[in-house]
Length: 375
Image 1 (spheres, rainbow, N blue to C red):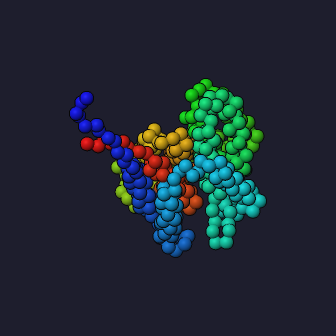
Image 2 (cartoon, rainbow, N blue to C red):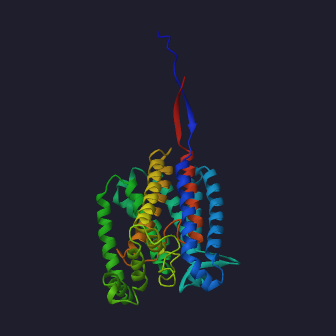
Image 3 (tube, rainbow, N blue to C red):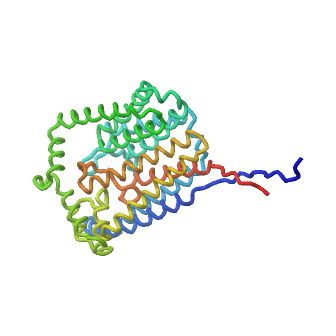
């Protein structure tokens, strides 16, 4: 027998501090840019240049509390059948309530108001769908290769997508995209999704042709210079991006934010970033999101189980879709859909539940175990 000592292994708990740092950095950068972008409009409308900054800081503080709580709850809790179904059912009822008793803001009926609290149920639905689909997919890893199983899952989530689409088409598109991407990652057969893509394109064409104003929006996207009224926001955003040059005019020196780009603090904040910080600043923002997505992929690949991996894939899909759609809209690569830039654009419910999703991802990262040899 050998006298060499047998090496034992010890398990080290893991926590993704890189992801946490990226999120905190994006939040800090977002606050700086939000104040720069919104100070003029806030002073004009509310007589307080810090109006949007203060509200965003409050939303971030609430979101960080939600993130901390979600990161401490073992993520397997959300896998329980009654929990995932309850979360899904509650979010569906809240979205349906918007149609009946929702409140208007900026011409859109997307909010529910309970006393002094006003929130967007469609943002809650994104988290609910991620949890629900992760639970469903983790219980049927083999059946997902069957096209019938994919259709069954789509039928399960179709009601909430339809309810959201009634008042908020852009969010419904994001929720549908999250569902498809999660199933795409879980399925070993990619050919099924080519069929889905054809069906989606066909349905989209019918959807556009049934209403003339949707066709006008497409024409305004293709030829914005011929539709100055419909494409006003897009054109002003492009002027902002083009005038920024390589390194921008300097922080706070934007001209387009002075009433030219409507609602610049929301979905068109990236155009002012490019105007003030230039192409260099815009690329740096994109690289931050690329790093964030990379951390999601690392956590998903090392998750302790399939449910944890699918939770992270769902959050990854959400963030990726919103970033890509937002950048596509502000550069006129697709029609205007009103999608905000995560962590940077002004938002209440969206910010709180984005940070809640980060808490879910951090909870999955806490489940990763690193085996180290012991001497």
